[in-house]
Amino acid sequence: MFLLARLSLSVVPTRRLLPACRALRTTATLKADHPDSEDGWRTVLSPNQFAVLRGSATEPPGFSEQVEGELEYTLKGKYKTKYPSEGAYACVGCGAPLYYARQKFNSGCGWPAFYDGVPGAIEERPDADGSRVEIVCATCEGHLGHVFKGEGFPTPTDERHCVNGICLRYEPTAEQPAEVQAIPALTPRQIPD
Ligand SMILES: [Zn+2]
Image 1 (tube, rainbow, N blue to C red):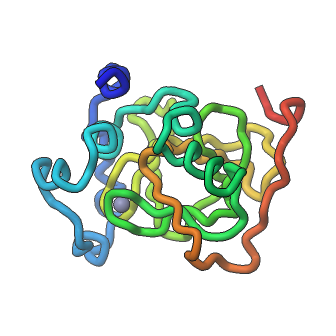
Image 2: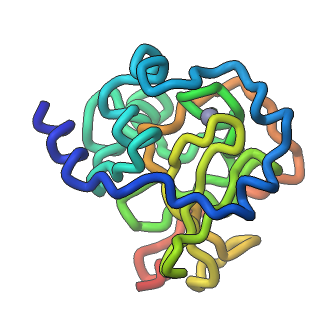
């Protein structure tokens, strides 16, 4: 309950959709097999998952790595690394593959970070005031986090998808294209301020 209360504190208003984004969605994504009501989502998501995916809350920094049962905590326990080289990460809301394993890198920011995502799986929604760009699952519209560009990371895209770990499920046997490049761990000196 403590963690949920902390999460709830950072809930920000939802429904900041831009008309242009809505227009871009395809009919295919609207037919995905997932709940279409708040009550429905509460039956498939934990309270903390619901707060983030459907309420746009942000998990506290370090939450994924430090809290037992969360994504990075589990990766470290099972695979001895937060950056396994095989597999992919899927949306906990709808199961759509969102990120390939080798796209995950150490940004030093306290949340799981990826330099790119599965093509077409992630939708960008600029905040109305232009300050940040929200990212959502293109299939179920679940809030994932934000994407930041041009920060100076030595990755193929210099983008940082800053994702709440609670939104992701690691699937170790999922296939990823051979050309997806792994990023060697960045040292603290290399991590931009
Ligand atoms: Zn989804």
